Length: 250
Length: 368
Image (cartoon, rainbow over all chains, first blue to last red):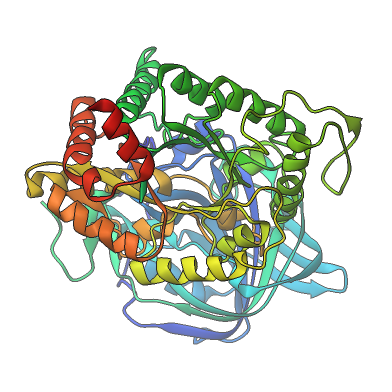
């Protein structure tokens, strides 16, 4: 049997879900940069809730998404996820992140349990030499990342894994499935450069970055979907998954 | 229709000092029985670093052991990873020739390129290049075997003129295959004039379409060496007199396999590349599951249940035009060894006679 994560969370200090997302929110002009890197396995296993399996090698993705239009106005997010499996489903367990829009931040936290906070600067900008992602807070840089000389690839080559956010749902901890649909109109891949990545600021103080992979950038539409299911973080996902609107399993 | 058995050699946790040895011993015992029962092939994968899913990193040694303990069954290296960072092509040619010699000409040589980042990244291989390196190596291997001496000046490797030794026992060389997971690789197989070793669970209609496409292209191929025109597919096998027990155990086997496969990091998951359009074995067992708590629907045409049902299913596969079905017998030892062996015996007794081949007919006559 595959091994499980070693983290057994309680509801203390978790983000409180106000109301699970029930509606689709579509963003027509979205850009997404994804930086993927392996992390040393021992700390990664310890950081994963015990509902989830670590894949090997253990790895993270840092996803920076710019929304040029939304019901909350323009906003950009930068989120760090530790990848895992909920039974045989791919999930990105959210460790932490930032956004530059208070209304969007409140929505992502309250409807999906996304562990993000507002920062002074969160940006994703196309430059002549590539794509630049930055996060800054209190005069300090938390992320300086570049996709150098990205070349065209097919949108079909890019795969986005859904978020799994640990939150307080009705007084108990729950992994909330933050799922999306997307249509990619343009996709590129290039060499990743992470000049600065403050892992502690992104909720991963114990992780150690190792093997950095090529990064991707895409443009297209991005739709935030209603929450379909939640998982008890302290039980194997095969028995601890509850579809929204249905009673909890015994 | 030929029948083979196919090994990933998956090893469940916890890993005690005896666990891996016992799993290998179980697999070898199954191979010896399969030889006696009239199965045609034993295939063993080459995988690296795939925790639990496959601890079969040196299949040539496993297959040499099987060959030494059996008389008739063919041994298939399924597959050699044709990526220079993992296997230098000269070493593939040398090891294959030795295995063919010590097995008295019973070797089938599978080729492929790996589908996981776990493996490719572990050897620092570039996923973008594996299709090209496979294509180059698969054309060089027959020449290394057939030519007295061989020189190569290519993109992924080069060598001055040398005699690659020993030469295989089968002439001009052992049958060659390519692992087919991504859609379209069966066409690559046909273009090269080599067998299509199917490793995905297609439905009957899709399999038939692929076999037809393969045969059409094969008729005008540019063969890498001696033509191998066979198409094989993969399936699960659990045969039991009681249909319900057979189905339930077979579904547990398939589910366990899918669960283990889902834990791998595929190349497609982390490395966006046109070179990897498919997840490989995973999607067929994963697709129908809508949420982590849902049981995935079984792949179509699984050879699990009672003999009558399995005969019907295999008739279906036969009608698609495949020449061989290779069976996965276990996953993470979820089926006890005694039940695996009983399943093989029952299959041989009740199912095999409905699918005679020349080799099996001769073996039956010899046994009488």
